[in-house]
Amino acid sequence: MASQSFWQWAESDPQRLALVSDDHRPISFGEFGARVNQLSRAFQSLGLQPDDGVAMVLNNVPEWIE
Image (cartoon, rainbow, N blue to C red):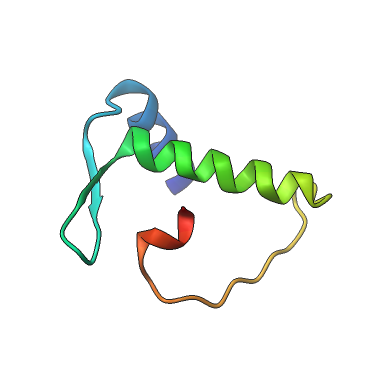
């Protein structure tokens, strides 16, 4: 599963390059993982539970995770 591979990289090699933003800023797996966790906590604070559905219609840029 893709999410398992992502978290394996985030834990084993957090400095490894995960993606590059539109403004050419490198984002590591560790940094991206921290952003994913931040978004997850925000959803949980709104009462969302695991397996709840969420739809987000956004541009395809990493800044939305911030």
